[in-house]
Image: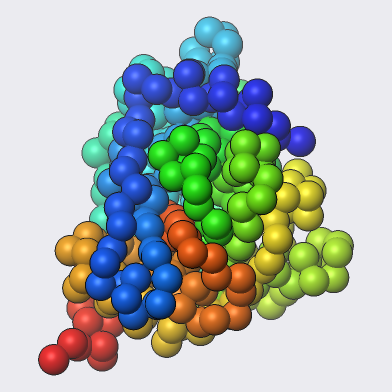
Length: 320
């Protein structure tokens, strides 16, 4: 299981390759929520999401022989971009498998970083077996988006920064997809500040980790559409779920309508551009379904969004 020492080593390893993102306070949103709201701004991270942390940590852990072979991954977007960028910086060849439904800008970014992009299937689950085939055919190193301790340790560095920059926080709200981010963040937070509540938030149509958390065992769900496309998944990984059970205090869900309102609120009030998946944390806090402390950190997981979808959201939730 990922521990604090793993995360501290990851922080040193990736320090020269990623941003130490800021924690920003919003007076206006805090007044609306009736409590202090802070944002951990991973939307300002390299490649536009927290995924750069895990990608750099994992690729920097490769042996010289593994680097020479190259890497392969599958992803609907942010993990693909992060692996592509990290591979480019480190001089490693990368193959990336993405679903045909992936945001075009994300696929273009991967190509821009020099990765070989292959579009296949409708979901990441469809692209996964193709990535494994490629791994075997070309003798590549497979980089999983969740089930890899190097990835989780890298993501955990965001949590470590929260404990250092806001040691008097009461709660940390984290968007949850496959569970890799919250596993790393919760391990860091609970190790340094055990009294802080760590709360995972999922779209109600993609609640595989929450369903598993409630059942206390890995549970597969029927995945449905959500605007928070970066949090897609039908079951958590075993390694990630072990960390969730140990360190996460609560798991809650929010509707697409709640996500849209939180997204619009953040962009209008903070002037920061984020993707729908990043708004899930604030939507969870504003829902009143989980513990709310005096000082609460909402982790903004990324800022890579489909502009057409964003335009539709803004039109629907226009602030007059």
